[in-house]
Image 1: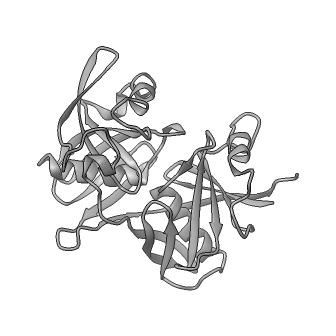
Image 2 (image 1 turned 45 degrees about the vertical axis):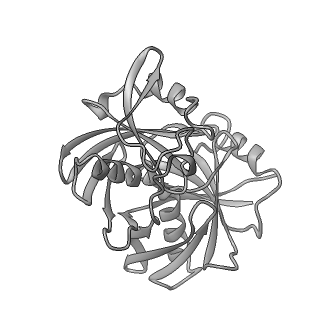
Length: 278
């Protein structure tokens, strides 16, 4: 099985494009190959598969073997892979994900390479039961949550996968390893949750750090950046367009008022190619 190591702002993946369907052992493969000491090392495995509804289908298996419904950094990697490797010549294409469905992609290319990818991440889901949380409300904004004797306020958003956005004084220095694990499995979130810790620097700029469900600390989370902007708008903290700065770099996020769609623009990179021997 051939693979390509890729990353989106340091959120790294083992990309597989030579399979016709998701392997039966995909979960075990991810646990083994994503190990940074005994495997290739990655935050997850991404499979580029045929789609009957779109140009390509993306399936994402986290490092712990669970499947993610959506991943903003991974979908940019897929777009770059299929364009750079000649699987498509389209500057506008569609990628199917199990969390959102059909996602339109716009590619900015230079010298035959994708240098920036704009992804339609769909409409944010704000109803508590659909995110899902155990709170059956139309929106969950600035809601108290307690963990290990400490109380936070969170805003819940789904971008095809669940997110819990918490505002803190200094996101870059926040103790992710202490607070991420217990909040991911908090009883309020029946399918676990991605946890974003955010600090608003201005109405056009947010710092964010993330604990990803099924992976842990990562350098970036595209869907989390989108959820953070939506949460910031709901809390009256930012405009509908803002730069979200993550440990691995910046993403530009837009929440269009007319269509209710969220758009993410950023880069992706190919690191190296390899082959997995059975």
